[in-house]
Length: 427
Image (tube, rainbow, N blue to C red; front, side, top):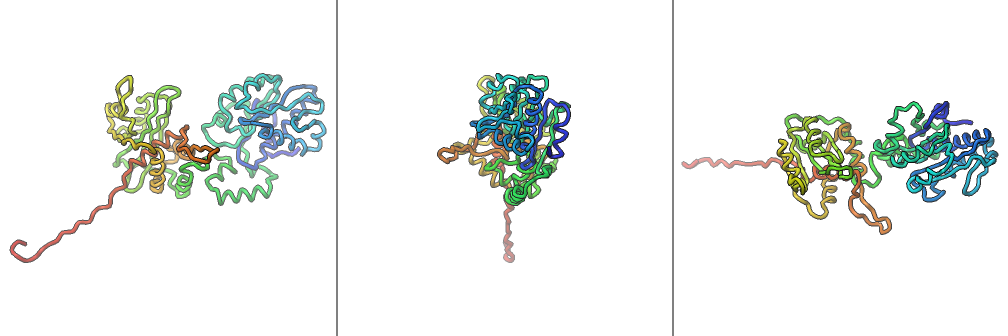
């Protein structure tokens, strides 16, 4: 049986986990589907019974599952197809020893735990799978030779799937990157679409075809200006000017596990240029942790610019962020409340200022991810926008918007003229 050469080591030898990640057209899903059937056939010939579980995070019906992928994969191999009984809503080996089960992990993870003798669990489109789902799925693989297989198109380096399977150093995991060029049967029709995306959707191309993380979410407020900033070279290495004021723009968080995150952008205003040097975010940490970060980065003389709630005192300790930062030795400014529509006003201010902004790509990586995701909440049923979505990206976007609202372009110097009167005794 022929499979892409890059996947041969993944399916060779023993492993607890086998996986592949990357862009579209790599043949990873079709190959993994086919290899589940090979496993099923092997167990059936050995007289062993069990279940092959095919899961996705979201699955409302069988049409959302991997069932059709498995059916096509089996039928592609003339030697394999006779050993399977394939119906409209089921797949099993002809002898009935191995059954396929299809499940959505978002709603049915607890029912998955009750399934007996899961020999193999293959999770396709695994990027959005939550840490809770992975934690619950793992103990269901109780057989001595049970395996977990994972395939996905990466979106975020913060996803539980990325952290669990790409960051792990466990030698029992065999995971590789697969992209279109690794597929020896990459079809010409997909190649035409790939080339079209390269021209028409350059902001999405790397994610769709090369397995890169999503830099912008389609429809995000700052998708276009961020893409333009990257194409113009305004995202890269940005040097600080030691003679100019450091400004730290805050979105205030709280303490506790469920509190909003605290976000800080550090920037310098140099002429008509805004140099964004650094980004910080922490959830549930006290003010001392944020101050420690500023000092540790060398921003102990920074001007701290706070939103209007920075002047409000804590109900228990009667201390505001403004007073606490002043006590810590920082200069502080508080931007007045912009009233209703403040979030939209920050978005518009950011869009106007974007052409003048330069970002340090390394130090601002987390903040740039958030800006690329920040988008409008939609009521799809009525087709109307409900304002900015309050999610993980909104804290970074609010602090960034505060910077843009607080920015004042330098005023051009006014030319003055003097009139000299000659002649007469008063001259």
